[in-house]
Image (cartoon, rainbow, N blue to C red; front, side, top):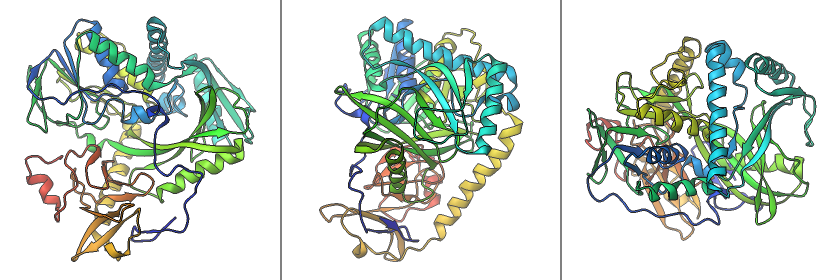
Length: 532
């Protein structure tokens, strides 16, 4: 497939080795528990918004403390980023420690390593305590370079390891058909099957009296001594504490998170290789990134190949990213089959350190965790452990490190300007595009920006020939969405909201679906139920 300049697809061929539809390996061959929609107002000690690893782990910890907990999820449990992860449990988060030592100082860089190492140990201890069958496996973690530029960066990272006392060493080879300059290993990390692990925690939560509600979308918070979370169905949950674990915060208060976060998408293949996988978990320092690990499916070894990250709603045709990963897999492993393909969305903060803590300074009743930068298994667990202490007013050594109210001058000023200039650029660019495609030009299975009665719209013609038309103005702050042919979705290039081809919200911060009529930016500001 090739994409023309107006957002339409010129269907030339489809790579038959790639599965036609995206499906995460972590969501297959598992019976997920089902929960009702919230139908009445309730009161609890803690309400948690978001049923991914942060929300579920937080609920598990807090019910163990004897607290009355409710978890609400706008979709199904474990169907967000947690269900589409690489599922490495590691404190090796790309090239980060030399950067943190420069921007945050030695002490905070060391605290970051310590927090994520404790998160790994917590997962291991929880697996052992409950005898959870989730394919938990100790692994060494490697980052490697294929260019002189990144070889020097790895050398600096190795120096940071030594200063911080991280168990690792420089290497000059890895056991793959990849020519490298050097590599850096972090010993005694791990991998697991995240949904199998978290399903067990969910069972424990409900056994302890915790409540979980699906298809329940939070849209606002009434703050105060006992804040209330309000939903789209005009229901409320009143609690002593609110934990926002919804990936992009559904409620920003005065925190301005839309200006302090940006969304990245990355892609994954689960492949059957002809060559045996040698063990370990790997990521390239060079860009575009290549991440590797193995999984066992029905006594058969598969390899996960992950990478090709880019800002959501921006860049080349999304299927090209899958094809690039397939080409890499062919070169390194020789592929028998591509079993699954999927993509995931991650949020990045201005200084690459997650925001975990009070939504705004001095507001201890509403806490937030976001911005894991693709390392959610360890960071999400670290966030839950921090939340447990904050809810109980227990001192925690990582509270100041992660506080969302921090401002680290060196990276934050530059990145604030760059990222918000990008948002403005995307906003303006989208408003001036004039598609030449019409609904009649679409083939079955094709989506594109079109012109209909003089207005720009989004259209998708399904496999039965039915055309689904939406207005392309994102219901968050009014940017123009782009067509994602790999997932058949409409993606916002400003803050990462994603919508189905019929316009339903798949991923926030938008809360309202794409509209059918000619939606305007002013509607976001004047509508009482706007997602903004």
